[in-house]
Image 1 (cartoon, helix red, strand yellow):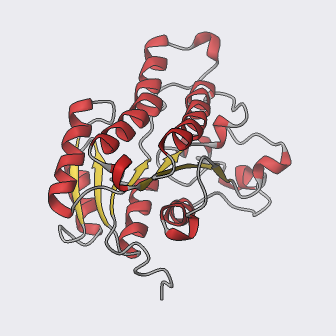
Image 2: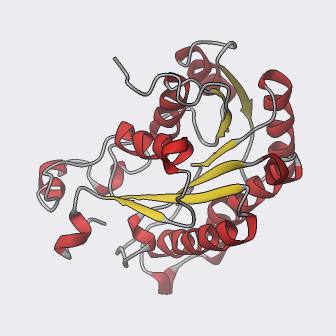
Length: 256
């Protein structure tokens, strides 16, 4: 049995980028803990499958769109509030990294897209839920960052730059939005998802050997930490970036 069943009863969440991977695992965990959840993603068909996996419209609603689209963000917050009530948990999970290679060869248009989605999209979602009343009612925000934002990761350096900015944004928002809204982040290492597959495909055992816990992360590892940050057990925790890395950053070995 899940000992945490009901600890998020009555809470309403939005999880961005939740049609698969970490986002879907987070949404599953929040629903298991009693919350009702709005999930977003670019593909309507994938979102419909996610909603079905989450227990259907009694537990979840899907709103397709792009995270860097202000109209989509406004629609999502409105539709989730219509279905379940005002949003009091926001999980900024959506992220992009369309390029791989050295910074000196980086396509600046791709860099702008990374910032639009990973950084400005994250801020835009926070602005939207606060405009809808979270800043007055209270609530919490959890941003999904990365250990690439803590230490240089070869090949995905600008993605790391965007996540370092998310970490600082998290701290700044925690100061500005307290005491009513808590804002924290989680920074995973390599998690076994399609998004991160290029970092471990065909060499998972080699990559996992760098981790003191001997394995890569699973989406549910991140989901458990997010659910903790969203619940009352974390009521005195804000402005923090929680590292979820199986111990790899302690070894000094690169995983990217």
